[in-house]
Length: 106
Length: 403
Image (cartoon, rainbow over all chains, first blue to last red; front, side, top):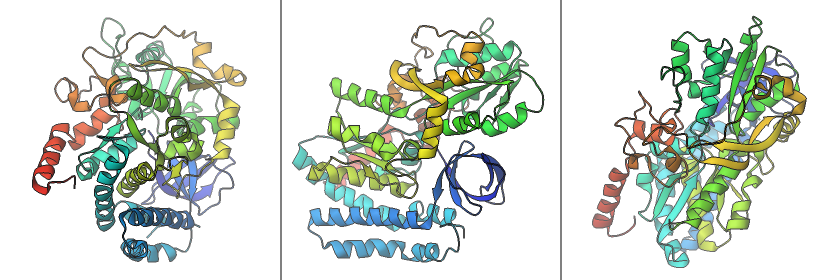
C-alpha cells in the first residue's frame, strides 16, 4: 500500500479535492495532502491523496546525490573521482537533456 | 514526454547505471568486510514496494554473497489483525456497508463467521453482504453520500495512507453515515522492534536499513535518525526504482566502511525531505491519536498505531458500535509463518505452506494476499532462496570472489 504514482494536476476542484491525470488521460479525483497546489503541478498520488509535489529540480538534486555517492566510493577505491562522476553523468546525459527541456512541472 | 515518465526511465530503465552501481557494490563489499569484521552484511527494508522492486528486478542476484537483502515489516495488509477483519465481516453481515481497499478484500481470518462459512470480506460479499472495494477514501465518501445507508470504512495503511483520511476529516467532509474503523499502523516502532529482535537473538544483526520512501515523504527522513544514533546502523531513505534501491545499498556500504553513520541519508530527494510533509503531519495530529496497536502474528507494539481522537469519536466505529478489543492471541492460520516473514527471521520459501497450500490464487496466510506482501512478491517473481544460493555458489566457484 505504499506505492505512489506520479500524476499531473488537471484541476483544483475545492480546497480539499483535485483532479489528476494518472497518465493516458486517466483522470481521478484525489484528496489534496500538500500546501499550495497549482494546476499543472506534477505530484505523487498514493491511495487517493496527493502526498508530494515533484519538480525537475528535485530530480536533478536526486541525480546529483547519486553522483556524489559514486564520487565518494571512487575516492575509497583510489579511482579518479572526477572520471567516475563523468562516466556516471554520461549515463544520464540523454535523459537529463529531455528533463531540462520539459516546459512545465517545476 | 511527461516529466513523470522521464523519471521512471531515469531510475528504472537505466541498465548501464545499474551495472555501474552493482559493480561498485561488488568492489566495496570486501573492503567493508575487512574493515568491520562482519561475516555478512544484512540490509533490511521496511516497505513492501522495496521488496517488490528487489525481487521483481532480481536485485538479490546482483549482490555479492556477503550482502543479504531481507524484507521487514513493510506491508500494512499483512499485519492487519485477524480480529479486525472478523469485526468488519460481522458488521457487513449485520447490514452495514463495508468499504475496503482491494488489498484487504481477500485477507483470511482465523476465526470464521457462522460455522466456518465466512473467512474473508470477499466471502462475506459472496454471501450477500454489502462489501465495496474503494480506490480511496474520497471515492468511498462520494459513494456513501448517494444514500444514507450506515457504512464503515476499513481504514488500514501506514503513515502514507493516513493523510487521505486526516485531510477529509479535518475539512469536515465525511458524511454522518460513514464511520471509520482504524487499523492504521506506524512503521518506525515496528522497524525498531524487528531490528531489536535480530540483535537480541543469535541471528546476524541488521547492518543497515533502507527506509520507506513514501512513508518518509510524510513523516520526514529524519524520523529514521534513531537507527544511526541509537543502534549505530546506517539508514537510507530510498525510492522505489531499481537504481534507488541499488544506490541505497551502496550508501549503506560506504557508511559502514567510513564509519560515518551519524546522519540519516536521503536517496529519494526527488520526493522526500528531511522534515517531510508538514501539512499532512498537521492534519494527522489534528485527527488522530497515537495508540498501542496489534500487529498480526506478532502482538501489541506500543505506540505503533493511530485511532481517531475524541473530537471525531462520533465517526469511530469501534466506539460507536461497541467493537471491544479482544486480548491478542496468536492470529495466524495453522502452519503459517507470516509473522517470521514480516520480522525478517524467515524467507517466504522457508514456510512449508509456500506455493503448496498457500498461493496467490488461494492465500492461506496474510503475506500472500497483497502485492506488497513478501510471500506474494516471491510467489509471483520467483525469488527463491535456493536459486539465489546456486547463483552465489556459481559466482564463488567461477569468479573466485564475491563479484
